[in-house]
Length: 350
Image 1: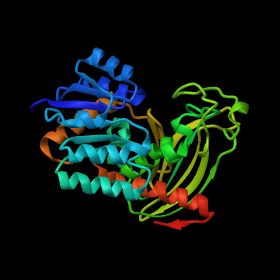
Image 2: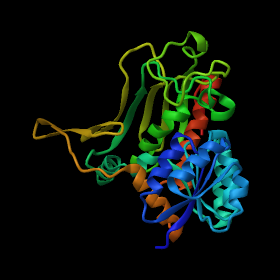
Image 3: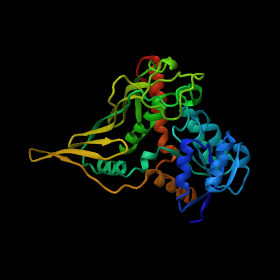
């Protein structure tokens, strides 16, 4: 297939990840970079070749650009993605889709109207072990999966305290939209995307409420900005009821427990699976009155590379990829319902 010319909008950390993998893809060529901090865009242009822009609107006027990656704060996902689609570009937008399911549905409608591919950066859908588990569940190896439990907890690691990650008007939320979206989407994907019915959730914003008093072990996404704010949750828990299994979750960017957990347990009638997030998994089963513990292994491809290649192939062929927006909207609906439930203090229907 012909290589597609690609632009990256947002030259921060995730923009760098996208650029690295586009540069290795046989299906695309990096030709433009956009950032409101001009030095960032120029740095990317010098490294990968191409033109640097400060305004994405100017870049979108270039008819030679076929596709863009939107790597911006969450509040900008919908407006920038819709503008790119209207300009005739295919779009890979980072997760979460947007800050509401209503915005997500508007983005989907814009993609259909433009006849362009719109994929979302739920990269775990391209993880080899995740797809192996998905195939096992579909084949009935676990029997009926009736419940899934997940934890995404860390010891005091709020990202970029005072930056856009902790500013609700820019991010739309805290740990739930940053980490929770990955875990919930991975689970929904493995289960064949059952219909979400209701959510009961609680959110806590305690440890980061007084930024100058916050001691931390890790602060990825930049050093603290004490002139900024932290008005998002750093800890969550809840229960999702679906047309299939129930899903329970516990998450925390920051907790006063020194041991974290990044895992997903799929509980089936015949067998169960524990997946270490980003890593391997263990199968617990039984036969003839005996209990078995199996640790499958395989050579895994880079999920980011598979994501980028799949997006470009989808853009060229018109065939939806695994992270097509319509497949991810149910995850966005769960996020929306979680925040409504946490605010209302009760279970809410979707």
